[in-house]
Structures are given as C-alpha cells and as structure tokens.
Amino acid sequence: MAAHIHTLADYRDAIGQFTTYPEAGTGSHRARRHVTLGVYGKMIGAVSQVYQTAEHDDAGVFTEGRLFDLKRQMGDSLWYITRAIIEHGTRCAGLIWGRSLADLLPSGHVELNTIEAWVSSPRTVVLTDFTDFQDVLALLHTLAFAAARHGWTLQDLAWANVAKLTEHAGGHVLQGAGALVAS
Image 1: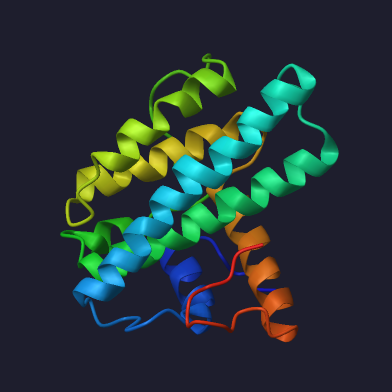
Image 2: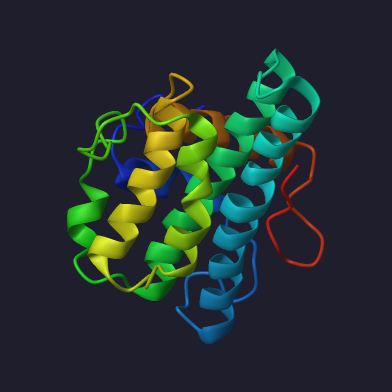
C-alpha cells in the first residue's frame, strides 16, 4: 500500500493505475460523464444508503461492519472526486493537488449530527461545477466533514481506498465493461 499519501496529488498518483473506465484521462464528454455520475452514485447513493441502513436498522448506531463499508464507500467517493478534477480540468487544480489530506477540513463547526451533515451532501454534489475550484473544494470539505464525524481524515479514506483497489486489482475485480467495479 502507498504509505506516502499525504496530499491529493499523492493520492491521484497512487490511483492512476486504477483508471479503467472508458476514455480515462482524456477529458472527453464520456469520461467527464462517467466520473460525475460516479460522484453522484457514491456520495448520494452508496454512502447515503449506509447512513439510511444504520438509521433504519440500528437507530443510527454504526456497527463495526457498517463502519468498514462506510469507509470504503467514502474512499470510492474520494476516488471519483479526484478523477473528476482530472477529467473536468478543474481551474486552479494545482491549488487542490497540494492540499494535505489529513488537514483538509471545512473551517465550520463539527457539531452537527452525522445524518444531518450528510443530508446536505446531495445538494452540494448536484450543484458542483467540477471545473470550479471552490465547488470542488466544497465537495471535498463535505466528504472530509462526514469522515471526521467518524474519526477519519481524507488521508485515512485514501489509504483505505488504495488498499481496496490494490486488493481488487489482484483479484481481477477491476475488469468488466471498462468501469471501476466498486464493492
């Protein structure tokens, strides 16, 4: 596993080999659409589903297994956000790449309930213009905020995601229709 992941650029480089979707790295409409839909699917769909299941089944309590799943889904969200920065050619991306993943948190207070915080995520995701630095930063802050509520940083999510992708690549799970297969 890549123990040297400190910045978003380090993470971008570590996941470079796991870009099996159509037209990856070209900035084409198809590549941009793929990663944008991936952000929507992970942050609005998969991560929200873990929260919903915890709320429905256990009154909002996160079991060890559910936390493991949540961390993986958030890691996948970080993967898609990072790929969206690349595919959309985010303005001022150089400012994003140098950001420390361990320190990337919004400046606001972290008193909100985790569920309440995540409820605002769909609005943030849908309104994101992936070419705009401030929008992408807001999206990263939303993910960092949700991760912090569970004691994680974006760096923790990045390490977990690279470990998962490496494990899956070894088992040939990253194949199929050319898209990243998430578990």
